Image (tube, rainbow, N blue to C red; front, side, top):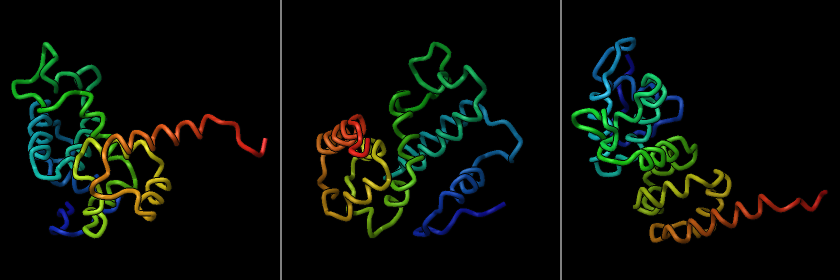
Length: 171
């Protein structure tokens, strides 16, 4: 079984699932209970800047939890587990989107770029709506920085969406 990288090492997209599975409480093939999923995600969620790893675990859980049982991880479900997730299902979806974004998870993990990103996971989740090339351009041009607000990001997302809905000049 592959060991998690030492603190400070950067994970590649290919390594992330291996690290997640290597830190699970059961062996591959053994079923993880809903309560164990909730406990693992909550543990990551409570860590400082644990939103990427919480989102990655949520993404894995969403794929392996049997159909119809995903909602039981959240306190609003009538059949919720004893100690449900400390977040709403909407927050979980945002964290999954953030963890799946190819550029953001690398930028957050990179110490030289991570300090240039907004500290709010919610603002980062909005940034996950942008194409990686747009995100890289915003960072390179200095538009994206630690003091970037969610309102600014929402405006960028709206601008990109409106540009995508216009007919191209080549038609």
